[in-house]
Length: 297
Image (cartoon, rainbow, N blue to C red; front, top):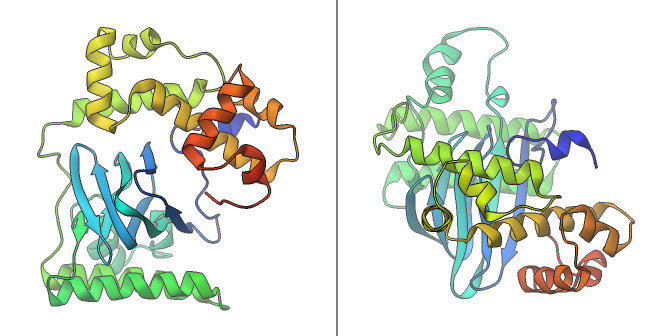
């Protein structure tokens, strides 16, 4: 396995590249499915629900996000999502690094707009609803970004960057800018504990992970730890471990021509039948069907 992938401190997915520091994603999920397992990354993210409803988690906050509403996630924030209702959900996400917006030299834009955004002193509201003129304008920019990413016409990267800069301008001009440079909830210690556990899982998912090992990281008793982890993520520790392993296996199935049994062992399952059962439960299809392209993640 690529050691860079295995030792990634956060989410393993690479969003964009040096010349295009953003990634654009469209995803569909059925009723009750985990839209996003609890994770974090250094980049910022804009998440807009296109159909259905998602119960979203940002650090310790939980709130519903409905079709036509968007969530802004600052870099470093732990976040997760769970499809609500009976119809499932569909969403678009843009994950972008701060370097996308940075000026070539230190100028007024960098000083007055980009730096306060990077320092979370002037950032977006967590939840953006079409409840006012400024919010409707922000959502329109997000829709335009989505269409630019979908079309990928020559120069669309400039459209993405330009729209994001316009959003920052309108954010400040409208008075919607939020200062989240300090954590007002007092939950920073809980978040750091959870990140420590998630980091351990990401670094060791291909080996046997025991509950007491995770509990000892904090440290807590196993019972206390299970309650803490479930309250923070909505999943039991072992459900989260299995979910992370299946996500890694799904990525391998998409890009690697290897035996399914080898991939199962590679991501930490020592029982192939159990791997197939967990994969089918989570991805709503068998590993072989997923490989054939019937499902995308």
